[in-house]
Every structure is written in C-alpha cells, then in structure tokens.
Amino acid sequence: MKIISFITLALILTFTSALCDSVNTACPVKGRPADGRIAVPVKIDFCCQQCLKKFEKDPVSFLSKVAKTARGQCPVSGRKINKASTALISVAVCCNGCKGKVEAEPREYLARIGKSKRGS
Image (cartoon, rainbow, N blue to C red; front, side):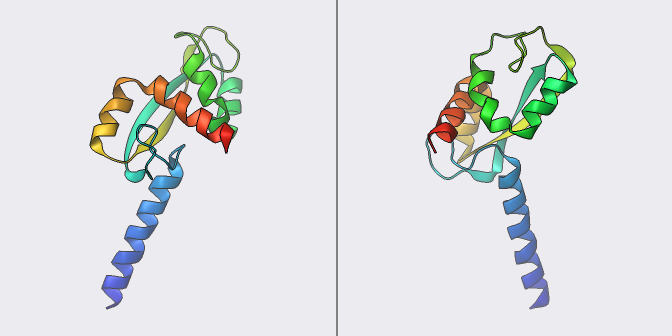
C-alpha cells in the first residue's frame, strides 16, 4: 500500500511541476486544459543578458511582444540579437496534434497566450 501511495504522489508531483514549468495552463490551439506532459520548447533570443533577465522575471508579459518582434531583433529592446542570450520556454498543449501546430508556428501561439493572460 505504501508503494502505491508513493507512486501516486510521485506522479502528481511530476504532473504538477511539468505544468508549472510551462508559460500557460490552457492549450493555445484549442483552449482546453493543457496536459503538462505534452509541451513544445520555444527558443527566444535577446540582445543581452539584461534583456534576458527582464524576460525571465515575467515571461508571459512579453509573449505578445515576442510574437510581434521581427526575426533577428530583441523582443525587449528591439536591438540586434545575440545568440548567447537565449531563453527556452515551455508551451503546454492538450494533445500531440496541437503540439505539431505550435511547433510549426510558435509565434502565433505565443501571441494567443499573451493575449489570454492580459485579458485575465
């Protein structure tokens, strides 16, 4: 019985931590609750470590700006990016079909997450 309880607790903690590591709780494609076990890593480049630190303090507040920023420009300052200053965020989705859509067009879905968080 103790083993079953331990395994159940471990699974709950794994699911919760996976979901918490994501920048969203609802699937940006279908709006359903996101499955924390299915996520898309999205790489975001910045011009410097200062901009990276600003982003890391509150990544969700920058997602709409990331989606609108031209490729090769820092989403915080607008300056030319430096590949050494990079963040990797996790976008949770509800299923593998949605995972493929976010992988194909991550900026579109980052904008959706940013809009939904502003409206909350």
